[in-house]
Figure 1 (cartoon, one colour):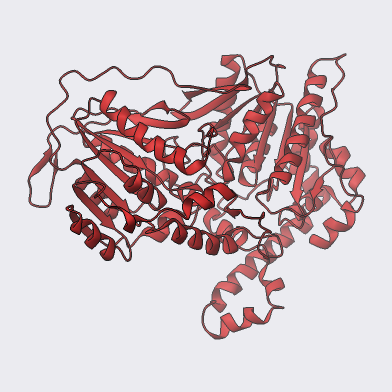
Figure 2 (tube, rainbow, N blue to C red; figure 1 turned 180 degrees about the horizontal axis):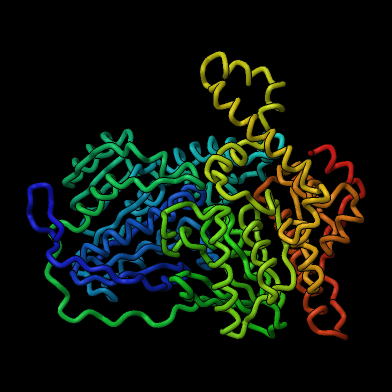
Length: 602
């Protein structure tokens, strides 16, 4: 039973239903039916911030559905798993909000509509013109210009090259966390202004966040009943994709406001929507659940299929659409070349269930079981994968899967940091100390601002000492990796790679220039370019001028060319007598100075 602060019953029979995928025009969404005549539409924010908040946003939808109200959340057109919009992004987003309200009225039989908006999503919800009964605005931007200013500041911190300099921006565009805001989007944002509204967006409004009092007074003057309050845990929700935390107390307030006074049960709810299939001229996609409740999307060509399927593993805590939506774009591009692909969420990521112990899935040894479940699912569906792709922690899981599953013929490992981890490794500490800083403490010790931060107390000397000890231990481990007593072991990295090479599998390793994982190759396989290529099956490829996340379109083009070449060669190896077709464009040729580069970086 759910009650309010005074003990009054809000919903006497809370229910929870498994959400089902739906389409709202070009937008892909998740719908949870409810027993009441109230529907709640969740309008997330854009790009990087929503990527950070994705998992928590899913939890909020579950809280609302569990209280008995139908809940609908979605990816805006051009984001996540949605189709690209036919026109500009901002008008398409506003139209999707209106379509979501209509869906709840028609599909859920909702007579009352509540809209919950986060950040830019709150701004858009208030300006959508949709007829709604209640509106929750979580840290809204008063204007589109304010959103652009804040994202520009974020970009200088998030999108950086290996030397920590800001990534060059395209003219009249803004990239934030690998999500690109184009010229038309920026122009449309500049016209958004909540204070210019002449009618209130809803009769009842809950405003939570910093500096919301003036906006609250404006809506009161327009006739709304407005409640305001702080949003103390906003930063932990939208600023860190790896370690984002769900703001439980704030979300509980949102749920209570959204469901309070909910009307009587629906007499005869409509049946659930049928299977959700996304399609375009070159591709078609279908959502599936498999294994221990995992969620994935199979993307296949609309035209002839070559018989090839690529399995893509999550990087970090990125949902299956990938960093900056790269995986979705890659999947649809592969389909245009006749290649199928499957992107899915490991447990603890995106729309898959939580891990049993609630821990992060990054570098978790047991997460390879999720990859195996995906392979089993695809094999049973007639789309057995031959190539697995992963970036960073996803590359780690891809290597484990390739080593343990003979059904895989090749792996493309992008910016792999470690092939293996010692039991008991503190993953969260390793990730915080390593991936938040592309320079080690020894390198930064040569910079004056580093010492100023120590003297002012901004950096803890004890913390630095612990990090240096860990770094020294890691270096010692690398130095002894190729010692005879270790390389002869079948469980060593060299032994595992030799075993998979004997069965005909190969590894294509790709690195951004100066990536922190490059010394891993040297540690296990030596400095000789030819020897490394012979042991892995492919030469290591170093991509100049790229960041760790391969954010720019030109860098993603290079990965696509490399992957397409590996897929075609794996196909030829599986089908004797079939010549591999050359990929177009050809995979980037590895630099001649690979040996020197590995030595210098290590």
